[in-house]
Length: 327
Image (cartoon, rainbow, N blue to C red; front, side, top):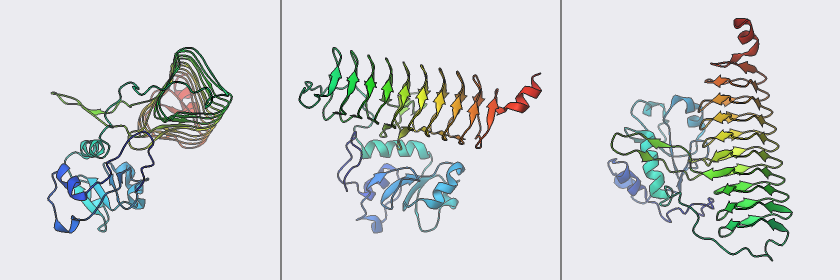
């Protein structure tokens, strides 16, 4: 099956028997001729993809997954339907990391781009380049786009039309929409902060996702936006991000959001549409922030926030309640 990921090469043939060996699971002859297509999260996995279930937070996704092969642990295995093949391991996320690196052998490598090509003025005749711009292979840049001095756009990156890319910007493993402004010093598409702590040697988690930026977006100076691990990091259309904002791996931000300076959003959180986040607010990982939410500056969000809510403080709570408690 064709690989839809333009940034990472997948093994051409993935035998389920090899997967079982990697997981130290006893081999059964009935699995001899089964081929695995890919490794995906519960929501994205198809029937021949490997997926994983490591927390009851994702029990709704478990009910709806199309995957027939699910990695889990002994405590959670009873939640899996009998129709699924249970792959029971001690450490789910560590097993997923090992399998991801096996399926995508270059997924740990995040070195600098070494396939620099000469800028073809005929190919990019409607693009203005500053001094010392470096392009990788198969880069697509739309017309009427400008690229500032000393910026690097790595292989297979796509930049839409009418974009303004500042100086000292790095784009890797990223797809940019149209009419996007990326200010000086932004780094988009680097690997996320994912690893397993160990007293001997920390184990890095592969990041095979990408960053997808919608249309009419502005990304401020010195923003860092990490690419996803298995899924993608997404910035919705018409979002404006102030300077020094950090977006971690797998974060999904809806449309029409405004995020002020020095906000940090931890991994795998989902932000709805029309959300406003004040400066220096922090949002913990794996949370869901609803539509039309307003988060006051300096707030610390540690639990889900429903639609149409205004919150403030640490831990963030309804703004009226916060004001009454702090008169």
